[in-house]
Amino acid sequence: MRLSSARVERTLSQVPAQAIPENHPVVPQLSQIFGDHTFFVDNSGLLIVEPTDSAEAPAGQVIKLAAWSDANRTALAPHEPQATDVVVALGSD
Figure 1 (cartoon, rainbow, N blue to C red):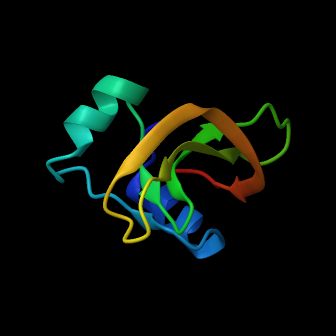
Figure 2 (cartoon, rainbow, N blue to C red):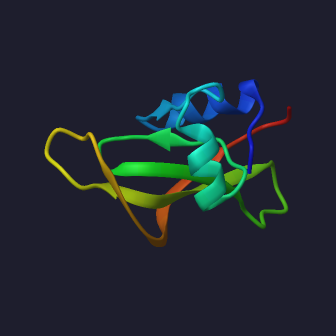
């Protein structure tokens, strides 16, 4: 799920992560591997937000796609998508 800038800001206010800018050179490669998403990184690795089936306000579940493979956090090792316990309130665009 690609997020609007407002939804990226809301996500970042709820999750201790950094958004990877859409113009970053790695985004095309990430999109080719994982699909069209807004990507985030945190201390554990690479994350995306997927919409939930909530009938209430728009929300998204944080999904982990890859883990850091070295102590310096310079390389990621992809793995099967792992749903986290984190659900963010996305609000409207």
